[in-house]
Image (cartoon, rainbow, N blue to C red; front, side):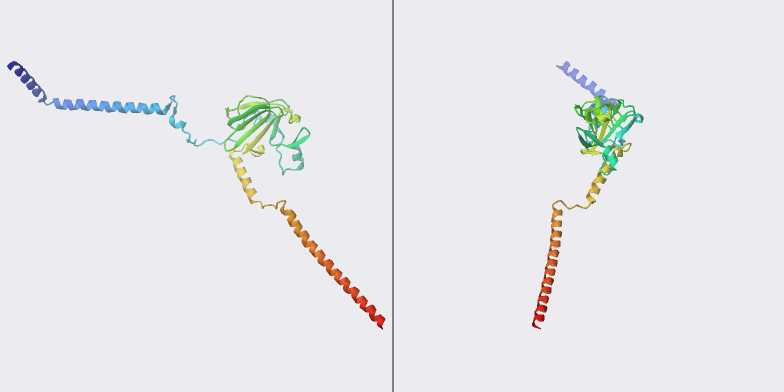
Length: 294
């Protein structure tokens, strides 16, 4: 028993002697600080890696790029372009029908199909030698229609922003399909012939529509697409300023009132004339009776 107590006492004494050394506690503090600092740095590094993994999209795109409410700043505004690759050899062979145009231009803007004349809602483009040619997108957008029509030929309709759309008719073939995202000046097909305008030969019929209303493409060619919206706003404001015309039902009422007034005057005149005539007759009769008495 005494030996065991001596061994314990000797161990305690050695431990006390060890901790009494000056460098022991500073060393313990330094080691603890290093351990804590290493743990903090490791945690921060792991957190940063998690954030990067969440933001990264295949190593190229960040999560911010996928936000639906993100607005592209400084997006260039396209100018309306001719829907052809080689514009030098292509000309306008039929114009848009303008209601205020001269008579000759109106007649030239009519299309005769099945013994019926219809107004041209766009422009027809054709090459000088009458050959087929590549048709390109006037503006960037999304193809919402690309199909063959038995009368119009292949028809492609492209949807743009703010209710704007462009239509390409009389194509002999198409190189796009519904749902495609296309860029400006991208080839979408080839000009061809159709039954609607057989006299036009190989041509493309091009339309610009704003909220379903056909506009004259030549008014906006080589101009910013924003001009179309401004033109529609100006047209709407002018229509509001114009005075309201009397309706068809109101016009007969006005005419009836005027007619009633005229008839009233005529009746009054007739009554006056008849009274004058009766007075003259009475005077003549009195004069005759006086002459008899004399």
